Each structure stands twice: as C-alpha cells, then as structure tokens.
Image: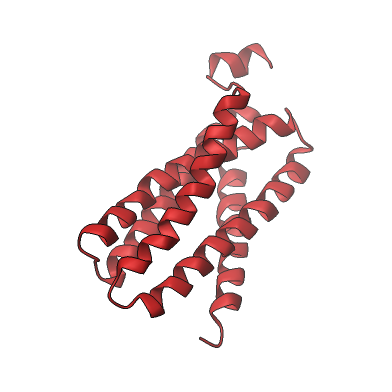
Length: 164
C-alpha cells in the first residue's frame, strides 16, 4: 500500500472483518426478503423481494469481475473486495428500515422503492469515495456503478419478474 493510500484511510480489512461484512451482506439480504412474509400481500411481495436479492447477488458478481478487469486488479483483489464489502454494509444498514417497517406496520410500495433508491445512492457515494484513492476517478466510478452494477441488476430483475 502506498503512503498516499494510507493517508487517505484506504486499508485492508482483517479476515474477521471480511467474514462479518460477508455475513452482513448475505444475512441482510435474507432478512430483507423474509421480512416480506409479514406483509398482507405476501404472495405478491415475497417473490419480488427474492428476485431483488437474486438480481443484487448476480449484479455484484458481474460488477466485481468488471471492476477487477478495468483496474487490472490494482492495487489488489483484496482492496476491491473490501471496498465492495464496506459498500454493501451501507446498503444493508439502510435496507434494514424496510425490515423493521415490515415487522411493525408494513408500508406501501412507494416506501420500499424509496428505501431501495436511498440505499443505492448511498452505496454509489460510498463506492466512489473509496475507489478514488485506489485510482478510479469519480466519473469512471459512477459509470461502473450505474452502468454495470445497476444495469446488470435491472436486466436480471426484469428477467426474473417477466411473466409474473
């Protein structure tokens, strides 16, 4: 790691931190989807929530592979894995508002959409902020985020929900 990266607070996670953040990503996605079992129209919303989780998982894999290709794995695969894990944790924290709302008093669909948009924008900002000191400029970071991650998410989600 360069002195500049160190000064900017770019550091590698420890293995226990990686394991914890991986659990947050998978566990949070599972809790998010399962919380829709508590809503009155559960037969309508559970498949949508599951499709969102699947689309997110697929899009993160594609995003990671494209990110590693674009950056030529520099500074390292672990730096980018850690950036993604930190970014996902931010999204999961925001999406937990949906879990709580579904358990307390299930809100309208507009609330769920607003939470997903807020989580996406917060994660985009988090990703760009972490990617910049690693050599990815803001424009490229936003292009990767909205073009690759969100693009793949949208295509996969549309495919999963087609015919519903």
